[in-house]
Length: 286
Image (cartoon, rainbow, N blue to C red; front, top):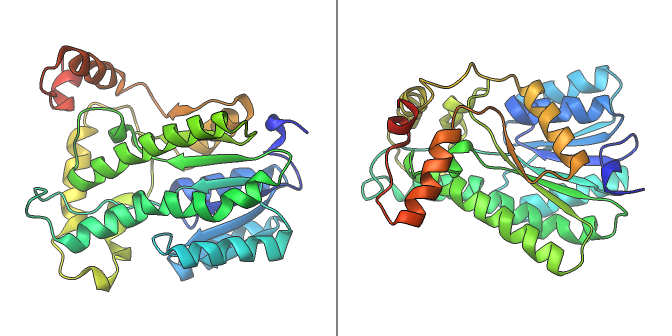
């Protein structure tokens, strides 16, 4: 089998952040292809319900409660997947959170650690835990979920910074795998507005992160402002279709609509000219 056969009946996909939103859309899409799906999420009740729904439709599915910021938990996820299905061919590092929109010099350290722990270290932990298994397969692929806000002028505080890091990490991973002669493919998903419950991600903020500000309200306000000129939100199932096509065609960057193309181009021009970055909504309004 070739690289295009990663998404196929009998293959095994691991999806983090799988209980809802894009993660659930991906899980449904892979199950429809006849794949075994290991669904990981930190929300046990919602995860169990989502997995049960797929199982009723005949999918081979395994729910595993997982905090992706914890490397031991991600290693346990890998072990559970291998024990249940014998292999892993597709890893979707999809879990993500919003976090506080306070100025970076004022935001609680616990919020910074939470956001980077999930959005960046969650990807790192996935790569480190699953790479040996993926290298053993005849075909394998990694999908890292970033955001369109990881592609243009810094915005959304720690969230935006973590998503820029996720893009750069994915690019480095691609280069290193190619230099090593590896067959493993890499895709970075950079969605714009998608119909999910992401804007209430503070419901999963760990108590160990300490006191917090109203992260949900701030995230909602910021995203609503920046999405004011975007197209209507895409459905998770639509995004999942784009991801499957990207895997099959070895596409690296996946954007979900063209609403932010101007801001992405302007960032590149500002870098080359040395000018200060312009707030992205300013460019979109022109």
